[in-house]
Amino acid sequence: MTKDDLLKHIAETAYNIGFGAKKHFATYDIVAKAPGLISFISFVIGIYALICENLNTKSISATLLVLGVVGLYVSFYDSKKETYEQNGVKLTDLFNELKRLNGSVKSVSVPTQDHLDKLTEIERKYTQISSSHQILFSNWYAHYKFFWEQQIEWVNEQKKFSFWRDRVPLSLTLFVFITSVLLVLYFSKVNLVFCNWVLT
Image (cartoon, rainbow, N blue to C red; front, side, top):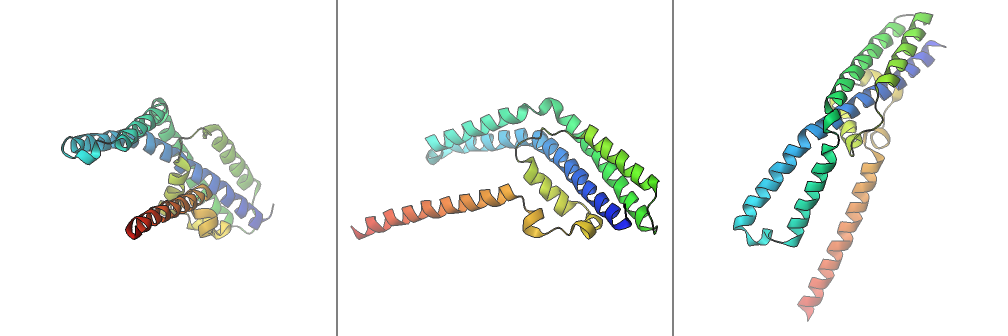
């Protein structure tokens, strides 16, 4: 394997491991923080519902019920949240090992067998540590944590991350697009009803 090929392989592995670490941390964050946030929102709405008649509607009740279901869904991950954090730490350590390996390979003209063995060992550990079962929306949060919080310049040297292709999740782009279309259609209908009412 040539030096350039090895550096590309290291960068690809670093992306997988670094993003995997952030995905584990994202699952941990969501599981740790979501129940408190849901309780706080429900509590605030409940208090304001006592003094504001507009909050005593079916839509608000339905929203609170949905929040309760979301809280129940999140609670399924609660028993494993410490494991997600520990795995995130271990994967971050592997990511940092790859950074050191990348520097070591750059400093030589021809990579050695030790470099290849080290990369193989790191990939094996990554497979053992990683959990494929992550909470909903952890992928979106992991994109933010990896691309906007993590120092990834050395990975970007080889990967050349683009904004729309890599830094923004495709599922988020589709979600925003579909939501925007639905909102435009909804408000167009509301405006049409309003105009008809004014004209009559």
